[in-house]
Structures are given as structure tokens and as C-alpha cells.
Image (cartoon, rainbow, N blue to C red; front, side, top):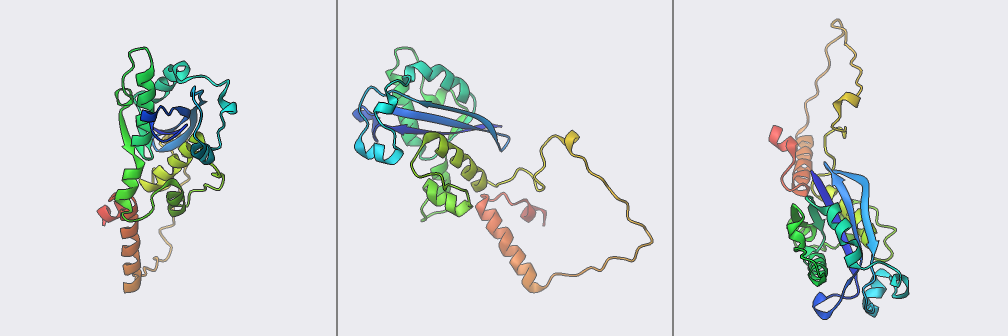
Length: 235
């Protein structure tokens, strides 16, 4: 299962007003493990950045002068995301900008949805899990204990990396109970046989209060994972 978290930075908030992408970044998640593969590019937008936007991401017009244009990188970008599930926080914003850039190209490029397996909006997912609460990336980092201390300004690559961690935490965390990789061949386990002559173990039954605490903990895990708590199914 290949997933890609994606983020963009732009000159403003609306492509219909001529605003363009100035940074695009992607981070790969493979079988619910963040890999070291990522894609990032700063882009020359051929227009000025709005002051308000520059305050958010800190990217300047001078910094972008010698950067490539979207047309120069579109093929490598599409090759990186092709066939994967895209995970985007507030997907309508980023997808709208990318599709605007694709439409501006002279060649016969299709909308982004044509190249990926599916697009998942992590903001919509967070709102389903946490109705009535703040669900921006900073709030989710705090809720799921994801370190965002380096996020002084918005940046597409940094935000894509943070989103990958938030998404995995929000959708169930680790892959397996013990955190092992799927490669069983590499899992070395030593089994020690216990003497049949030993005294029987003492079995302590849980108290009523302990059972109640256990049930509450499972309910919290089930809610955080969207109904995927396996312990509840095995009871």
C-alpha cells in the first residue's frame, strides 16, 4: 500500500485570481511506514507573492527567481505520485492549485485525480474523528503528540512530513502489536522451555475497577482509530 502526503505553498489563496504554486512537496508512506523517499521543488510563479502569503511561509520573490517552472517539473512530479493514494490536509485547496497548473500547460495533461489511486482529505477525516474541535495541523500535532517544534513558518516539505506522522497516528498508529516489520525471516526469537516441575503460577483476577478502566481505555483506542481496535473484537 503506497500513500503520499502532499502539500503546497502558493502566492495567494485563489488560483482563479492568477495565484500560482511556489513550492510542492510529497512524502512516501509504504505499508504504513514513512520511508526516506520524498519529492520537493520550489517553483518560479511568474508573478509576485502576496504579502500575507509570504508572512505565512517566508518564501520571497527573490528566492524564486532562478527556480524552475511547473512545466519543467511536472513529469517527475507525476511520476512520483502516480498510482498512490494522496493524503492532503484541506485537499480542495492543494488539488485546486495543482489542477490549475496542469490546465495552464500546453500539453494534454489530465487533472490530478487521473494519475493517483485516490485522494484522501485528512482535514475531513480529522473533523469526523474530532467534531467541534480545532483540526488544523498544529492542533492535531498537539493532540497526537507529534513534534512540530521546527514549524515556525509553513513549508511544504516540513508540513508533508508532519502530516505523514499525524495521519498514521490518527488512523491507528503502529502496524502491528509488537511493532515488528513484516519480514519474518529477520525476526530472531529465542524460546526457553519452562520446567514442568515448577510450581503453578498464581492467577490474579482483575478487580471491578480495573476492568472498568480497561474498558474505558479500549473505548478511547477504538474512537481514536475509527473503530479499528482489535482487542475489542477479540473479547
